[in-house]
Image 1 (spheres, rainbow, N blue to C red):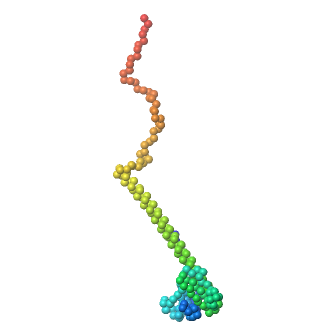
Image 2: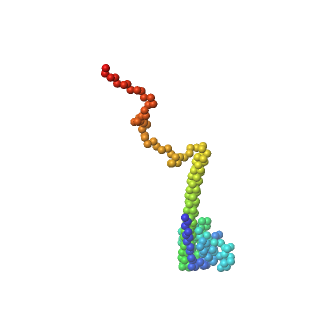
Image 3: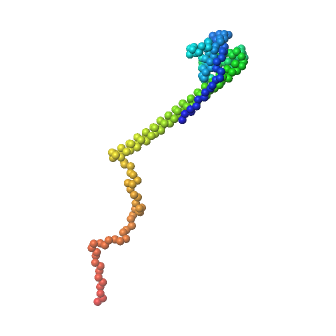
Length: 202
């Protein structure tokens, strides 16, 4: 049993210019051409797609509820804050409307990725449990076959007690009385003694 389900997301607008804050100097913002895919946010120095593979990106995995608008104390207008497992990224949109759109797109992507991760984990757990169950059944079956084969070898070699079939079992005694009754018709003895003849009156 597996869960053949994976959520997908179709993005209508994925290409926009954003300002990215420098990691070394928080006061420096550089313009970057951002491409939002199903699991990454690429930020390129130019629109040249041929350089995309060598460009950095933000991994959008394990990030549910980690896409937010920065606090007002940070002083980042139209800001976008991304928290990954190892770093924090800050971007800025040019307008409030674009900021809201980016926050919505990023939230949808991270939610779908997190759900797919849960589905993949559930599939792994189900397959692992099914494999363990199959191994247990195979072990029980192998033990049963080995025990049956051992008893068959004992019967053939005569070194062990043979298993009696129902047809060869001794029949029970119909007369449960341990002291049988005497024979009502005894056979005559071979030499019967003569009976005395009656005497006549003189």
